[in-house]
Length: 224
Image (cartoon, rainbow, N blue to C red):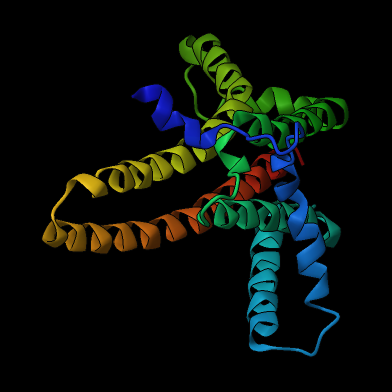
């Protein structure tokens, strides 16, 4: 039962080729085409979202952050949001439900932040290991705790996004598999529950992409 349940996340092959991961990059083809057409309500709405994110990320990065730095995290937000929403459609591979993608996004970012911080701001990175006002007796323990918390950051970023995507899809799969064995009245309630859960999953898709981008921005601001 568990094997069949989690099989919805397995990539499928077509004519011997696994093209599922190509859905990750469909946004690169679809999003630029929106700017080639006449301005629409969607374009205006999307541009307002990007402008709001730019202002917020610029505030999080502080005075040392450059304007171009925010576009990295805005692109990260757009990529994750697009893939989260793509996974809500039937028969479309959910790439963000795999650690292969989420860890590939989180680990290089974290490594680049750490390498840049330790090379260019060594004293600041050492000072960050001991919070201000820590008693001398607790300093060795705080160094160990802060070191561990820094090391597990890419893992928590990746697992948080993956776990939230998997949880929602598993609930939708479970509700869908119980439909054929129910009466017509119960199926009606089941459809209402699935629609409500789909709306909730849409909110989760937006929130998780925003959380991933904001945490990445905060990690970047700590090394400056």
